Image 1: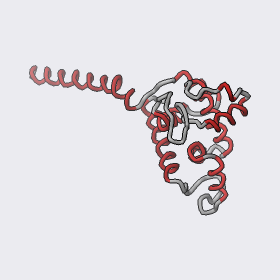
Image 2: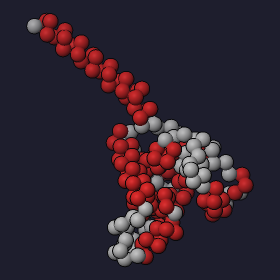
Image 3: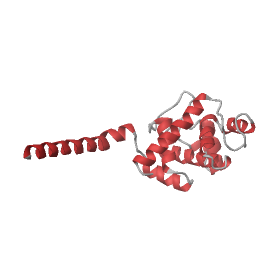
Image 4: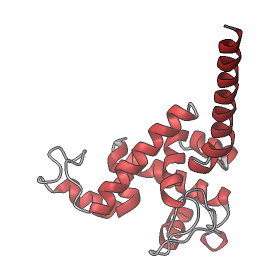
Length: 183
């Protein structure tokens, strides 16, 4: 019986060590959680869920501040120069002083833009995310098309496969961030 208890204890200790290793070493590599002071700050200012902002950053750049996409979008939230210049003007910032590789600037503009999209699209998260990926002008056209939107507010169909996948990926990442990190 003592031998069984010792084996059970050794198994429990091994299990605890594996869980700790997974939580402390593997989880941050698989599901990063960087720049959280900045995410919290701007998510609060722009009334967004932290899990949504983290989901967008995860899907856009995997938390790489220097990331540049094939479409020439920059930084953590993958913002194009055109969007950053327009957003900066709307925010009362000098567009010439915007550095999209700076995490604080990138997250600030990205959160402002997400909030703007959420407001523009009546708080419908899926529609706002589609706008973030495909551009708000495209989404406005889709909402005006009865084949893609019956009510002009929600999208039943997203014609761009990349955008359709993007919205699902961000929503999944957001759910995981919400569950794992209790956001």
